[in-house]
Length: 221
Image (tube, rainbow, N blue to C red; front, side):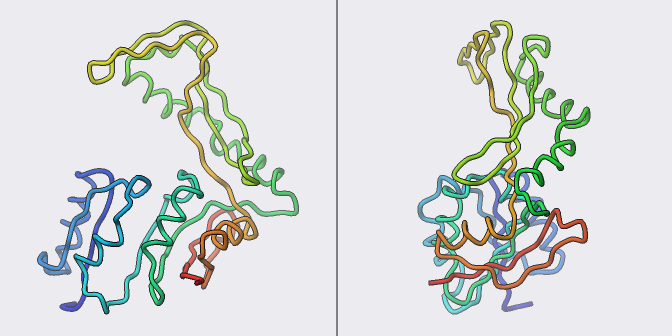
């Protein structure tokens, strides 16, 4: 393990430090480099990594639970910039199966539109000071650039004002607030998205349910 280097990274300082603490049980803490960043807004991630890691080391990136909740046109170019020839990216993707992409997404909608998920999303609003009875929560399927994603919006039926970090924010009746979205892919849509950004599938492991997969992605060019 003396040759291994680990860079735990998250937008949350707490989560990054937890990862560092866990890995330090098996890896020398001097070989662990915690990095707090928002990848979607970072333009120098590759430069940071090159400063932290030996240049000739093969790099393996793990990106689990992220792809469904990030816009592919934003995050995939960032990944392309980080992944060098010979590097590997392991990522999880939410899938649908069947002959119809839309019917496949419709079939998994109840996994999101249920009481448990509604309570979870509404708790975020309550934490901000928004009254639950000031509107209603709706789920739907949205198409964007040929991809389908499940969305959840809170639609205000009454005017509501809140204070966030000392700033007053007002929502008027008729306005909506996007609380959640999750992309669903087929193998074909995933391959197209990767190809557009100079990436390709190398290996895959798909669950028996065919609703989730883990993929090894490499640089195509």
